[in-house]
Length: 486
Length: 96
Image 1 (cartoon, rainbow over the protein chains, first blue to last red):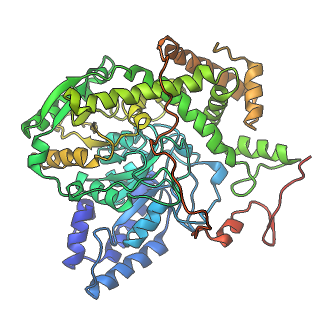
Image 2 (image 1 turned 180 degrees about the vertical axis):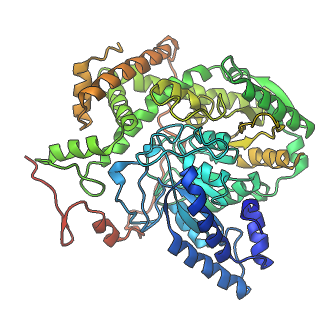
Image 3 (image 1 turned 90 degrees about the vertical axis):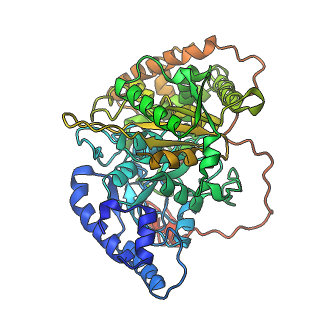
């Protein structure tokens, strides 16, 4: 067994065939992380003792020939915005530097109930705000494919951990692209789920109408398995829905896939798209056509307004969600405070980084009286128009498509430091992913199989498949058959 | 409309309970101007009669039983997280 080759499926098979124990794999991974993470910086904290104990429990169950779940003993990395009771949960922020979670996120309880192993918590942009993981208060995570480049963000630690084989799979969260963009930049699979498919309880909230937790994995099949395990209605998140996911989610049928039509929106193939990305998109489309899938050009006319719309709605929600970090009940208190008001100010000013403050102020601005209608109310209407574009494109009455194909990000991984001084340039990294969050749709980022070139190393590029609400099975099904191609 | 001045920035920071230093003031002012300029493109878009999309979900009237819910939150963990405490009491500074 080689740790690098492990997927969730291979792990499960090997475990049942007793080729290795869950303990050995977890132990092997911790040894590997100890060495490898010095150069990558994917993890913020490790939970070695609890992870090894959990792995032993799974081994005992296997030895007793008790039935074990497909995720039992699977070593996972968890984005540090998702709570695991007793473990640190910093959200990449100084204000939560010493915080330990007092409860499990619903996704964590679900994964605990099937015996998954949590290796540790991964780095992220502070409160998931960023596209490069450079906004973390603690460290800069490097892209495993090129250490001078960013892994993307904000779930950059989770994507880098999976890409560098320091975890078999991971959880991230996606508000405007934070699972899909780092997955694309690191060459792994990332799934943003339909809004409401997965409970947000225990995810440190950034923008509640946009946030979703989802898997980051080495294969589409693994992403589907992990998604199935975390999906479902939860009493602690009233926006979560009991969507019925059938067997086609993990066992797609080729004859169903062949019948599909994929739409290609002209608005996503614009000038400014990196030539490497354009080339990769052509390769991916050619491969998908070889499966017998039809392609059709479509239009999503309000696409160009998505960035402005998103950067009004998201900060507005950020400014209210982050009000809770005031140094009172948890987190770091600012020093030298006088009265209560002073404590709030000192705690926030000391605890938050620049991008967080910028978004809080921007959100406060667009919500303030006099500007509310011009910005926030306007953006909510534009959000409807963006969603209508997708509804129209998917509408079967108008010969609508089943799935939409786009690039994930306009460029491959960029250099560390390249965009840190220009927030607007950084925001453009999510231009192809954030419309999906505004519309609440599922979308997956899948690495393009690129011809390798001996002279120059090829950076990973992902393509994005956007599905109809609750139709994760369509995008994962196409992804599954794409991965089988050679 | 997108006029943002040093004074209004300081007012916003105050509303958000933030203190900005001189360097942050200058940088944020320039960043916000640029970002707000970008937002101007929305004004050109006609949204008359468009129903605002006010959240991520189309679910309506999600009810639950009006009773206590069993929570998994560990009370000890919550107390443990207090930045300042005396025994199991949370300490806060005076309001005024």
